[in-house]
Image (cartoon, rainbow, N blue to C red):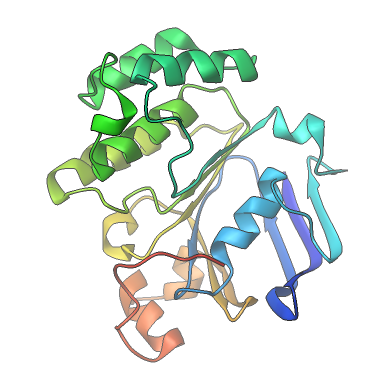
Length: 238
């Protein structure tokens, strides 16, 4: 479904991604791991068509990223992107105008399950509530590829399970999920394949069982990156 073929992305003189080869199949739930600046967000933005690679090819269903792939791809960024005066309901209408696969009925169900008031204004939302709104907007689509950049960032412990369960409910044999996170413990039992990035390159990738063996994801993370300091918390801006 999603292929990166020798993909490099350079910002000014710094390579955010370097010769990345990656394949994500329909039905897979993939965890994208790495310290800050390892290239996770850049990889997702290339797949979403929000940035363009310097070299190599990014393919969705065998074709280069473009208008067709954008219509079938949903991306949840870490930052808010709505006007403060808008309400939660307005955000849903905004998505309905832009995406033909957006389901307003599903959006309302998700708002109820995530305990979000559709009359609340964007400026009134805490960081955790704003993250839940972005999640609901993505999950209300029928996209074939769903990408979540740090979906647990800023979300309190009690709410994380709600978010994880909502993402789990989106899994299907026809859809691929790509999730980046530092909170590896929270998603240990969610994923079936993992990609570890280091300095913009793939350090290790494969099915979770093969990658981890008898270790946990967090233990494998520490082995690959050398210390636990980046295993939890923080944001990735590259």
